[in-house]
Image 1 (cartoon, helix red, strand yellow):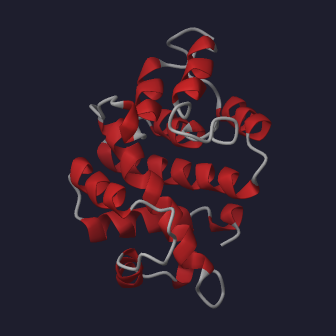
Image 2 (image 1 turned 60 degrees about the vertical axis):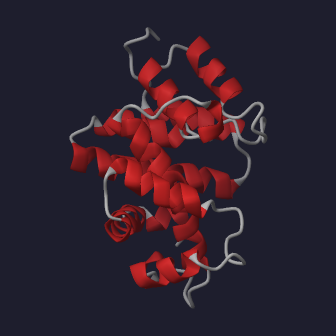
Amino acid sequence: MTEQTLPSREQALALIHEWIANPNLRKHCYAVEAAMRRYARELGGDEERWGLTGLVHDFDWERHPDAERHPVQGVAFLRQNGWPEDILRAVLGHASYTGVPRDTPMARALFAVDELCGLLVACALVTPEKSLDQVEVASVRKKMKRADFARNVNREDIVNGAAELGVDLDAHIAATLEALRGIKGELGL
């Protein structure tokens, strides 16, 4: 694959399935992909490129589950395999601790949707039918205020991500929720 060649979704899925055993982490990657595709359509981005970025953003988490290695070592692997540099920079930028600036709409969107996808899934899992259709923006906002709910989700990243993307937080939650509802069967929600 040359620097300009975009990998196929099938290649990205094969990578996800090779590197990720946990079905919930795979589903998180699918959710982020769906949200990225939605924002690409809204912001005039390349839907395939943005979707692939979301799909692979955490592919190395199981092998490198710490800030010292994730996503830096995963990106090194992708770079060796010819993945485009703009995707690599976005993946690096989704982890604030790397210091890589989120200087493109794609990179800002990835940061904005990553933690929010995790929160939305957690919100769906506590509804009576474990369904994204039962999640409402107001209930998501209430759950964001509860430190005992979805403890691993960084609320500050959600708020800062929406601000960096230049969108109202409620509108951002609604847009991301809509994207996840589009693949609710794949997510089991």
